[in-house]
Image 1 (spheres, rainbow, N blue to C red):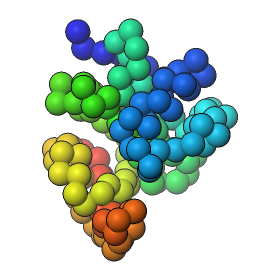
Image 2 (image 1 turned 135 degrees about the horizontal axis):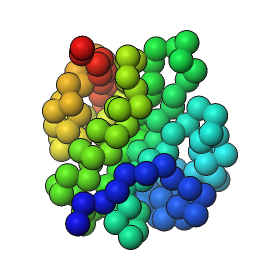
Image 3 (image 1 turned 120 degrees about the vertical axis):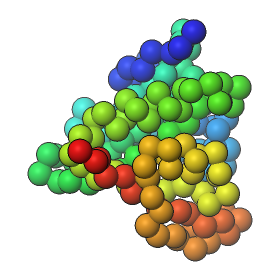
Image 4 (image 1 turned 60 degrees about the vertical axis):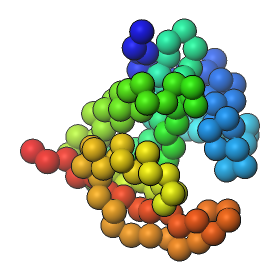
Length: 149
């Protein structure tokens, strides 16, 4: 069964926070951080979830007013036991559909080859690195996507 992609609702908060912790461990956002994302989700944040009876993935976008041309993909994750099933691709497709005519930026740990491969498959290109950015000294790779017409 392919999950449906939909906007998150406040009832998803606990499931998303638990999934974030399962995916990111010490780099997970705090519960209060997630509450803040939900509080801002109608202003400049878009939170999407992959739902197949339970939340199995999510994506968070920082979407400024239409006068700004850069959107940031702040976070994307898929439950560890659901990876490599196409859910990440579905989330990315839905997220990028909200970014028509804009540039999208994201950062990813340099060692996260599967995520870098997913982003590359959508046309993201590395534009910079933040040396030693993550705990343990791992670099952050900054990637950019521009819609091609």
